[in-house]
Image 1 (tube, one colour):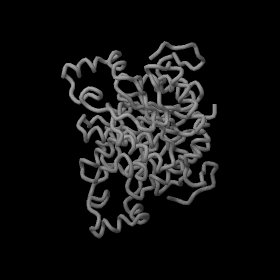
Image 2 (cartoon, one colour):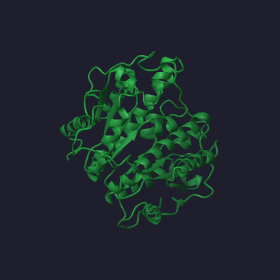
Image 3 (cartoon, chains in turn cyan, orange):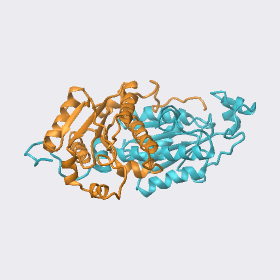
Image 4 (tube, chains in turn orange, purple):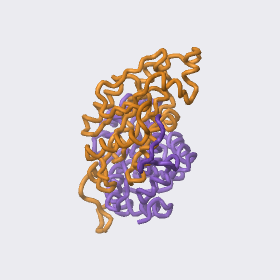
Length: 205
Length: 205
């Protein structure tokens, strides 16, 4: 590199940190990790929350099957090993988003407690907020919704290892947020989450 | 889900898009893909640019060895297959950042044209800006800097398949930005990049 000429384009305060980015954005980054049965309403509440946060001027981004399973994780299947790697990578991507100052909304069944705990540990080791949002819903209610017809196929044996049917869902023991999507309104669920984000100082509005 | 109660917390305009996020941020997302030899100055210019963008209130985020090789790609080695998968994943992560509205600054040697072209195609198929920044520097100049002592080890045969020594670097044929770090000042390099970001309407300042 040739010698630095005098210029107004010069940055000399060292690396940009999370604090710098929080100043630009007016809020902190955090991961909201939605977990629950297929059909429990994870995406519904994540989409609604994303819209509300956007109206508040808060930068949030949803990680879901559409942009993750078809993208960075497209070379993963549904073996036990691949499911764990799937969640590991999503956790690492979420962590990068938090570092960038964004509120990451991760919306996957993520049935195994050990996998979720690993993502939590990853965030906490870096001093980042990890908020597990358990979207609790009875199997009967989720199955009666069956928006994608997956329970029907699982009951018919056309899909194997389906969470809640022939594969376990390990409910979070101590989720930061416990929603009951078969009893609460969508607005109540979102309000609960916003309250926690305010209490933790992630958003101020 | 119980019936939606009347509330001021309600979003009903459909999914949040890149346009919504650009409105919050005041700029668009884009991937700046820095490529060049080890020691060519990729990280130096990326760090400087990140600082300048931050001063302008633009949200940028660097993807580099520190946060990628130790994180999402920690289960990858340096075989040909793993190198390609390394770049593929970084490309997918960068794309998610662009979708979120962030300017992703990717800083890896990324020596193979085919790998970079795949990342470019991925972005362009989604209507996203992909800006290849070739940090051009003679091997002699890069080797004389040798900030990490890697060239010395490669010459001594202690590191195999080192780009520029016993592994090829495929220079970009048509990079959007062609820097000459052994001839330009850091300020000149950054100004060049800012001009392109303005011309493309990614930033307005």
